[in-house]
Image (tube, rainbow, N blue to C red; front, side, top):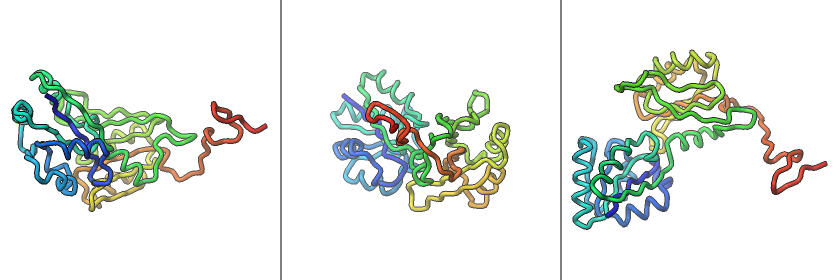
Length: 246
């Protein structure tokens, strides 16, 4: 018996992977969070037995999934974006496997990837940062309430837009006030917003546009529109498939 944990991307149904679409079409039972999965994606669940997990606790979700699987139905637990990034799947996988079920995780396009695409942004741009840090401002946890930040990396911040004043304060401890930032709200949904500016105005940018949740913050030198040259395509650079010009 197998349960699928399926990433369906940030909202745009055209960004769902072929594997995810195949699994959903073959599933008898779908669990999904109605507040996070876009209505366009939910349309794909027509004819299926569905459970909106918005008000369910983990024991209910896993218990019902186990019951459905043991009764011979193909079960998918659907997540927005990619399940492996802030998808809270660790507990689901552990409990399902504890019940003797096999689990397969199907990756999806993450909202931060779509956000970068909407910005036409390479997060690891030539002569710029070559590392990407995915972080959040911890909230209602026992961990130290600080994000992981490095001025030499592109920073992608999830799940923290409602704490924008604290986010800005921590960012200013590492980056200068004129450092480029972007905010992408509801990436892949009809009401998406793509905003850019400088760190010093980040809080104003968010509050003016009345953004309180479901947004990605990107802080990166790569947001500066500059001509950058990659060695990969340079005539003076030798690699396995091409010799440098003399």
